[in-house]
Amino acid sequence: MCKNAAAGCLVTCPLAHRKGHQNSCPFELMACPNEGCTAQVLRGVLDEHRQHCRQGGQQRCPLGCGASLADSEGEQHNCYRELRDAWIQRNQRNQHLLLSLLRRVHRVHRTTNFIRRQLAQLGNFLEDDALILSNRAQESEVAPEAETWGGQGQGVL
Picture 1 (cartoon, rainbow, N blue to C red):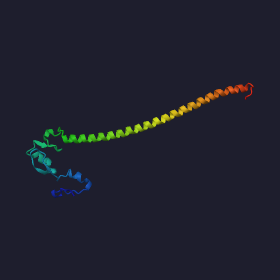
Picture 2: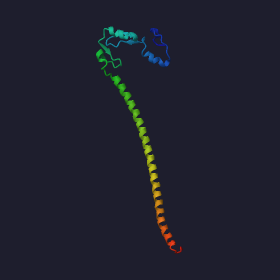
Picture 3: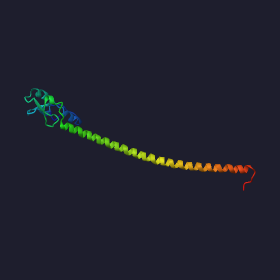
Picture 4: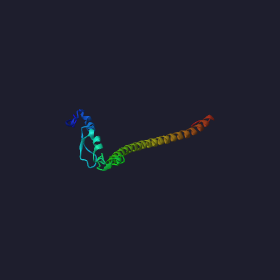
């Protein structure tokens, strides 16, 4: 049940949706945002009150910084609270992105080190293969001479 039931709100909603309803409940008692007006009116009739309010020239910032604003200034107002909240959100997002980037850099570094080790092993294998092939080539150069001598009829010792 809504906390404004005594004022006439008949809405009943799950607990998970209560905050959303309370932020828009037309029976919520609100302070008039016009500077100098101390009236407390229901949210549902607040716009009507503001149109007829004697203090209608100025209103307080709806975001809570306390600035007095003329109706024409409302949309251009850079509320420090709004800017601070936006900065905090951006800072948190940047920290998240930085941590993600650092994790990726660490993963690339590990992969690069693994590839370096694999290349070093491959280089060692290739050097070993080159040495084996070189030895075989030298042996095969020696072997044809022995066959040549043996082919001329001279006995092998």
